[in-house]
Image (cartoon, rainbow, N blue to C red; front, side):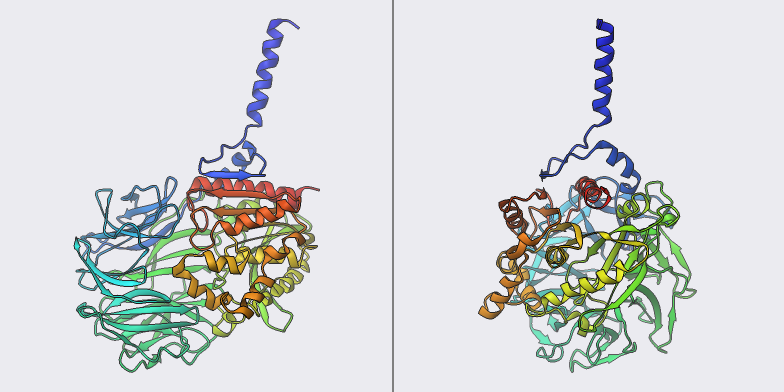
Length: 633
């Protein structure tokens, strides 16, 4: 062979190397046992990776603009939208995601940011693209609310309660030292001399208090010994305190709460569904509220004087959240549906006309291609009704029985609801994989009784049995291949991922478990202290010998060798909720048994990946995992 032919052959080899190039792994990620991701996977999925969202964050009273949180680079930042469908002008430029809220006068914006997902949030003022630190830089801070006059904010710091004028950080003042539970600052009464603060003890029990801002005196609203859950808490201009509560009901209702007697007077019926969120107009005449009806939000407006309620009927099925009235009366909110990512909207209370303020990009893809889910309902082992949402691929494009991923939500006080699936639409639209989102017992949205059915260690595995019943239901669907089912889940859903892979080890072909609890005892010992008491109420108390024994008995780590399917584990090194050690011990045990496991860790993330480059790589690796477990003959 002459030199020219040798050079040509070398060039062809070089082109071949380029053709099978690998996706560069972000520097903060460590991938153990995970095969290199081919570049063609990134190319094929690219449009699905480039969708954006624009979550409504509030109004600016000075110029009537809207503030939204959206991502144009690697993290979500604050942007200003001057008019409906106007350009999004970025005002924060941080390496970490930023949230924020304007003062009622529109002169000061308080921003909230943590570091690497550690959830030790700090408060700042944001001006000219720069953040000015307000808090101590090390404690865990939760922003509460501005007072109506825009003079000060209330916030909690490592559970203690503070007030501050953000324009003058030296005005920061400890108002009350409190212990236990999870304390949050909700709202100031007109005049700013009193405020409602709440000690959240569990998903079914919260104790509200009236706080005297000058003296720090806390006066309970009602009897703290009662097992009642209150939320919302907003003062009307006339001083009436509104809240949601399950007092005398299985679901959350909207009503008036007397701060002195603790009497709750509901104005919404004790039906089947929770009132989730509400806000009061500046003049106090109108209340907007949402009801979670089988996972979809319904938005209503109530005339306070007459009690008349009007539905906002023009909204599509989806989720509505972030309600906030502007000082001039317009209602702002976010909405997401299967065919639209989260975007910002407004509503005219007089006409109920809806105005869209942002139209987030979907990577050039037609969102109308996305399938709507169907509700699947069945009876579990004990007759309890459980359900979930099934997304089936287009049968015209993917005829016959299709593989399925079961995706289990966390919490466990969470709920799978219809919405925009983002990257996961690629699995449905391009790979023909169906996805099922179950709501097992312990999920919110179905009343206080249902959310309590998994409490403690002795009821915990009943929720795993619900997965078995739902597996039977979806496997019977003529569009689903019962021989090709895999699962995923995050946080508590990660525990369910491990546990289901053990209990139904002949039915799952793969398990991708993200920031997952593997041993409740070690989890409770190592989770951040501010969460420990709250989690003991849900899972059990590892200090009690009987409960500890049961917690160890049901720990997936104890039976990890019974998992027969391939396993993919994901963790964040800064996770304050489910520490990385929970994942480390699983990976160690699997490898000690001589089995392989894929392990992905992000050094700059916490409880789930927030940075786009990390999210992208995680998804590409998961695509390879699903191909191996569900699409490879």
